[in-house]
Amino acid sequence: MGGALEPGSNGVHALRTRRLVDWIDDELWLVELADDVEEVDDMLVARRGRLLHRIRAWDEDAARDFGESCIWRARDLAAESLERAGLERERAALQAADGLDSLQSLAAAEAQSATGAAADGLVYLADVVQVSRGGWFETYAGHPGAGATATPGAIAANIGFVVATAAGSAAADAAGRPEAFADGWDAERGRQLAWLTERLELDEL
Image 1 (cartoon, one colour):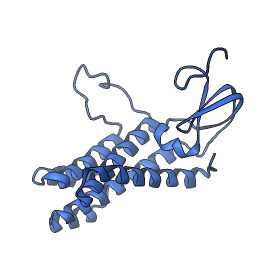
Image 2 (cartoon, helix red, strand yellow):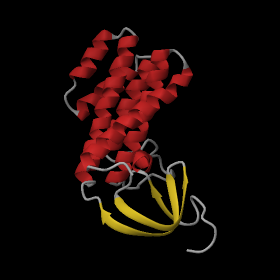
Image 3 (cartoon, helix red, strand yellow):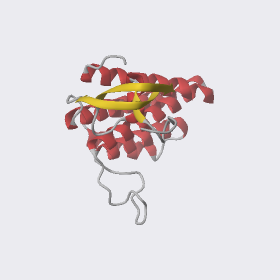
Image 4 (tube, helix red, strand yellow):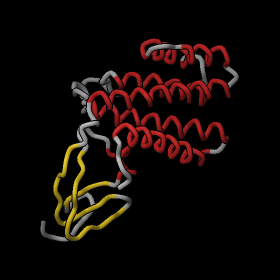
């Protein structure tokens, strides 16, 4: 491959394991890079590269399980926000929900009367359950995503992103300062990465 190596535009691209949660897709491959290799924010760009083998453990079942692990984490985050708001009855009801349908119905209903961070947490929860079914936030006629079919990898990626956002918002609320958002985001992304590396038996690369 000729020309100057340029992240995002020219070269063979790969990522280190620790960036996996930012680039979830339907397939995951181990690659080998050669010749010039440059690294920018854990993104590797090389002159040459080859696919070694596909990580078969990352399949539809793994994507679904990853998404569900994030959904239940979103449930816990919403419950903690309800507790901070003094809404103990609502918190107990949410934690007693035993399936995604009841979880979403309850979260959507309680979001109508909750306010502030508690309402936000409930909406995040209802949203990610919808995403897990292949739904999108914007489905009106004419929207670019309307009518599109979400793949398992896209669903997992979207759920992970939304739950990390929910974790950041919850951390900011708990700490009483907006800058704590980053701590909550990083902690949740770390949890997601740990889930993936354990499930897929990945080494740190």
